Length: 252
Image (cartoon, rainbow, N blue to C red):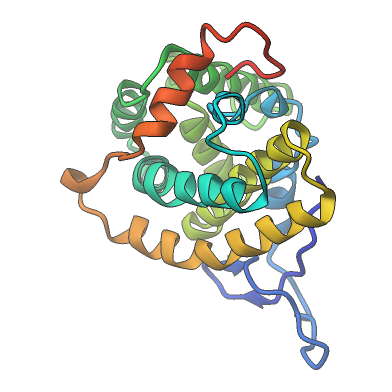
């Protein structure tokens, strides 16, 4: 799905993609050097296979939990706030921080913690397969080398994303906002394909999601290690039940 965003705020540490530009606003004269790399990293055209996964949304539609625009918005934003925002987001920040500090063992530890939190086999496989695809792409682009410690472990997508962000010098909060946007867009695209949901309805879901990004980012940046963990029972159930669903478009 094509993003409908205009970058409006740039600082030395964070680029916001959450606010559409007003008619009176003036574009920033010069964007940071990492801007294009972030747009590349969150692009649905990145060849890592993210389009093949729905994170349990397909079963939610099959079961009737998600059936229209309102329920799709509730599902996607609930996932963003109570699962991704509580688990993936704070772990991404910690992996980014560890790699910035040249603490590869710390990054590996948080990667293992995240992988242990995956609620179903499909979610674990999705994480590992997309993470591996991104790691291979970074190797092909010579962004990372085989000598790096992270090449010797099975990376989650979150860890591979943070690794790419560090290598491309993308600041931690900008990287997190990009990751959340990519998840929001991917889930909305899946909903448009699974439901009788038009493109305009999908854009309304994206607009609602954009308003949730700042508080999700703020909370993720404030969570202590002990507070990290997702609380989304239907998300876990939907993913687990999808494993035995007879007819499927998506791999999760």
